[in-house]
Length: 101
Image (cartoon, rainbow, N blue to C red; front, side):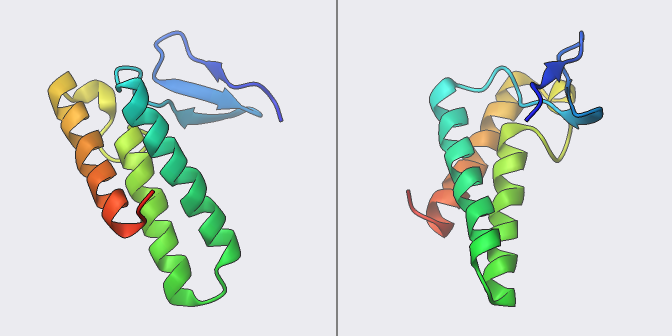
């Protein structure tokens, strides 16, 4: 897999010639790690689940994790640092309820 390259402004990464929004660099390391853990488990559930309802729930968890990391939703660079932290904490709490660690 090609190495991700961050753009000079830090807002995007390029992988295989495609641009993706970068993770919020100001997230607390523990919060970011927990969100990435939820993201990985949710992606695995999307591939593993064989019923429509289960897949939908797993995709909703992927969305929450990516929002918490700042990769989806309002761009993290347009929010205050406290709003970004609050968003990450909210998404993490919701993920912990949906799929306890």
